[in-house]
Length: 356
Ligand SMILES: *Cc1c(COP(=O)(O)O)cnc(C)c1O
Image (cartoon, rainbow, N blue to C red; front, side, top):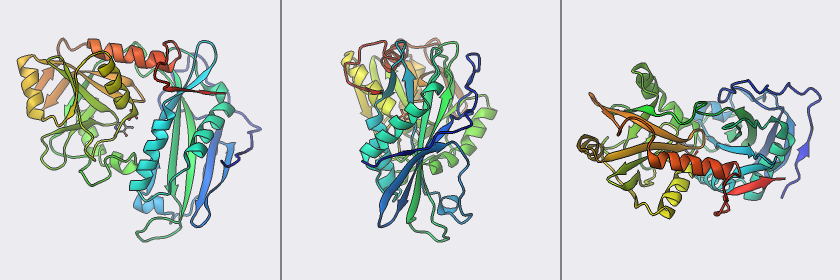
């Protein structure tokens, strides 16, 4: 494992105060991690330095051809002052799966985890402690060759930045309204839908604007070929409880394999709920909504953990899910996952990793 050079800031920023709402992604800590890659040499010179702008050649390949990978996970401070990460091994594994698809060189797992832990320790004072808050960790890789032409870059930067974030739902879980998109698509099988990369997000913007203009907070994507099968929400995977069975779209190459998705599936199975990972058509969903067997809908992702869905819109119909409130399984998943993340519930699965 590589030694990380650490240079601390001589000019620390004031920490956010307790009453700061910590709007997601707006505040960054005092330090960042940077490691370079050079073809022939591999990853080298990892460094933690004061948070600062980076300087890149205008011809840097990331600006022109989008060769970029990112991840997202959180660090939590427990009531007794310990710092916990939640399943970081899953994020590291997925980062390298994304890297593989995007022709970005693999990052050694031990250097990756050491980078996260060391940076979080350096900026530990930035981990907020109010209920529901956490420190969001954003690792990413960019292609830096100064070159115009389509090929994988020979040089990269791997950077990690940290951002204290507030409770996603300050007043507790809050059901969202979701727009089932039947015009635009996000990804197709064989494309890059299962990689966590900026390109998938730029593809989603037009539909997101359309949905927001109509009063919906998120877009639910259908498959890119037939626009018939449910895929996922903007930055969340999606679950349905139909007639007592939990159903979620199977991973098919165009869906992002969420860590929270995997966690939900495992917990539901342990609770004795039947869980099916399979194709689910929008027609099946509409039918279940109409005949009253669609009991619950929720999204799963690191940012909100669980997002109950109160309403779904498809074509010209709006369906209310049950009473439009928070379902029983959604609430239980939220309480259990956040309980484990905060060290309040026993971690039977060994999901948390302490930073010390
Ligand atoms: C990150 C992400 C998710 C959720 O993944 P988690 O690991 O649960 O945070 C779902 N869909 C997309 C498109 C994403 O980028």
